[in-house]
Amino acid sequence: MPPPFSVGLKLCWFAVIGYWLWSARNVKRPQRTESRAKRFLAYWLPLAVAVLLLGPGEWFGHSLLREKFVPHTTLVYSIGLLLCIAGAALAIASRHLLGRNWSGTVQLKQDHELIEAGPYRYVRHPIYSGLLLMFLGNAVMVGDWRGLLAVAIVAVSFWFKLRQEERWLVALFGPVYEDYCKRTHALVPGLL
Image (tube, rainbow, N blue to C red):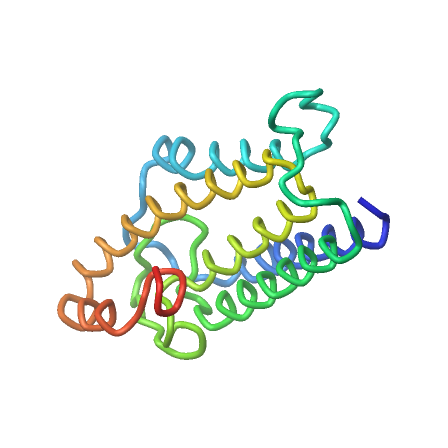
């Protein structure tokens, strides 16, 4: 990948991770949280595998995972970077709207509030949507099948995580959250 695109990709990820770390210092205390074992197995381990799949291509030798699904061209790199930028902007804006209700794990917060503003008007989990866009953009920039496998792994992990969150939010907010679910999609407006 040409250096300007590599730098742009890294800046997107550093922006999201940096914002997460900075803003996590001021969240509400948890009222209910998942076990550490479940968090590790269902979320952190799949994310680690996905990140490794997006690592240096040399790690994968001449395997099928190294086969290209898109050509390595400036246009393809540009599309991938635009997806990453859009995903980072969506994830950061959505995280900002959640404010003190945010958590990196499945939790209910003390005085938990249901946020329906901004992108939450259209999808219930726009942070996951943004992060999936970033992984997809990253995969396009890598251009190998291993990138699409990484996106699939992250998507499955996020799907399990959001289903758990929704069970807890239905238990907390009842009909209000059920009505919200009827008006919105989980990840992609009008689709999913």
